[in-house]
Length: 314
Image (cartoon, rainbow, N blue to C red; front, side, top):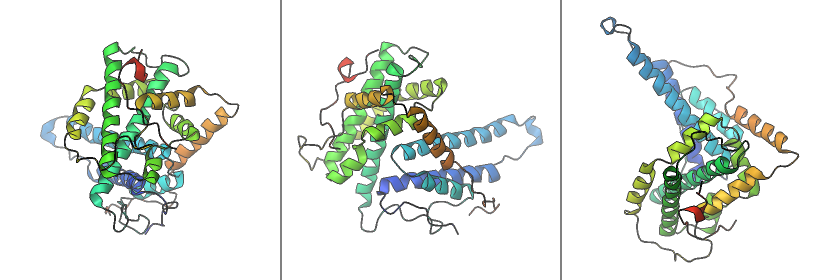
C-alpha cells in the first residue's frame, strides 16, 4: 500500500486527472515492459518486426508520460506529487488502486461538466504551449532555432489552429458557465507562471524537439477536428460579452510568452537550475520500489484574429 500523495487537497479535478494519467501511463509502460515482450517464432526468421513494435510501443508511452509531466509541472502541480504518482505507476499500480490516489472527481460533481472543464484545460494548455513555441521560434536565443524555416502557409496554419482552439475553449466555457475561480485556475497565468512554463518547455527542448512540436501543432487536422467538435456544443449559458469570461486571445498568449522569454534577470541561471531539479525530482525512482511480476488574473477577452495581427507572421 502506498502513502497518500502530498498536496492534493486543493487541486481541482482536472489537475488530479493529470496525476491519474501520469500514474496510469507509467503503469501501462511497466505492464508492456514486463508482460508485453513478444514471443519469438522460429518460422519468422529474425522476428525483428514484433520486437520493434514492442519497443515502439514503449517509446510512445515514454513520450506520452513526458508530455503529461511537462503539462503538470507547468500548471503548478508539485514535483513530489508527480514523482509519487510516477513511482506508483512503475510498480504497476493504477490510479485508485490504493489510498494514495484519491478520486479524481469530488462527491456530487457533475461528471459531464467535469469532463468539459477538463477539455477546456487541455485546450488552454495546448494554446499556452503553442504560444511559447511560437515565441521561441521568433524571439528565442539563439534566434531561428526552428531550422527548417517554415513557409508562410505553415505559419498561417499554426495560427488558424490556435484560433480554432481558442474558439472551442471560449465556447465551452460559455456553455457550461465557468465560475470566476475556475477561470482563474484555467487561464489566469501570471508573469511567474509564464516564466515557469517557458522554463519547463521551450528552454529545455533541443532544436529537434522544438521543430517536432512546431510541426505537430501546425498540422491542418487540428483545425478540422476542433471545428467539427464545436458544432456539437450546447447553447451558451453566459453572455458572450461578460467581462473576464473569455480566455486570453492567441496574440495575447504569444505576447506573454515572449515577455517571459526575453526578460533576462541575474537569477535566470539559478531559476533554470531549479526547474531542472524539479523535473529530475518528478522522475526520481522510488528507492524501495521493486517490480512484482503480478501487475497489480482576469483574462483578456479580445477574440483571436488569425494572420499577422495575431502574431503569427514570419
